[in-house]
Image (cartoon, rainbow, N blue to C red; front, side, top):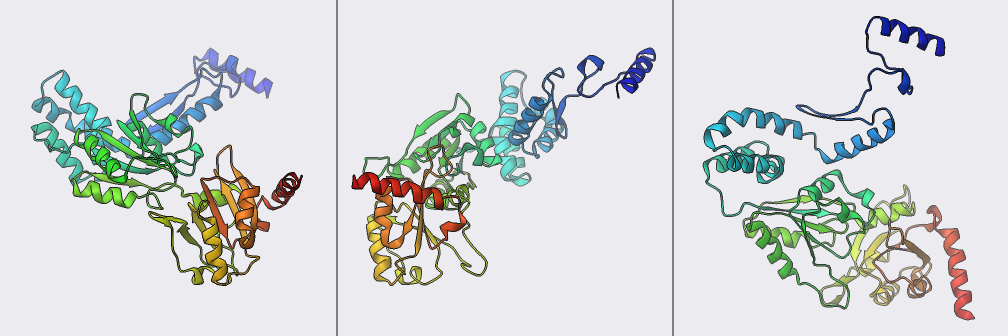
Length: 389
């Protein structure tokens, strides 16, 4: 109410009391910033009242970057200051310790183990008794491609990493979350092309970790779902390298969600199988009879090049010819593409849709429950007409 505002403003001014009228900058003697509160760590974001929504958005980004535990780390740092002053000389020795404490190995140890591991790291840093291995490796899932599907922990690890070893399937824009000064190593594998061997990738991770670096192994999807994260974990543990795993949204889940295709449906399919179409020596083999049973629903990773083999095996195992197939290429990305058919038309469906991969092939899910069916029928009809002409 304009009259009430004017009266309050006049009364407050006369009494020298600060006042704020919401969304009326000319009637404010103070402004309220957006606050990120992490205990002893407090960050205020102000726009002088010009763009409060922008301040709130920046607050959301900062909260995503700063784990709730950062406030506990600040409190631990306060308690350590007298001990650090006694143990280390002024200047670079202390600065190096605090850099490691808030941004390096000590903070990483705190996030892994706030008790024993953290205390040991502090003791080693202050005594000068450092292990040969001072770095660490994070196996991080980057999700299916859309940067907005990164987890908050994945974003923080991208900001922390000194070295990023990344795959071909890491979506465009995801590396924009990384520090500009981080070293980036592309080890992506492409079908039918020379690529970095898994053994060499393991060696790269170990070499940089032993040099004291915080290494991030960035994989499309999830490290443990056809990402060979388990193999890398074994190699790192055997080498004595501290390793953590940050899960990512795997493609089978994300691509289905991108077209609103339910993976399970009460009363129809109560299980869902994730499988690969490709093995190290070519086509992967499976229990085709089990997959061909009525009601079975499954997704196939790396199946485009082996589609003919998969189709033959399923048909020979007795799967119904009209079992629906939905294919999603580059799911969640700007260039996402879909194709719909049946198991009997799988190879033709891929050809009509010009599907090259990377793609997920869904078998046994009802496309009528997704966003794609009507539009896809029109698209494939146009493709048929174009081929015929």
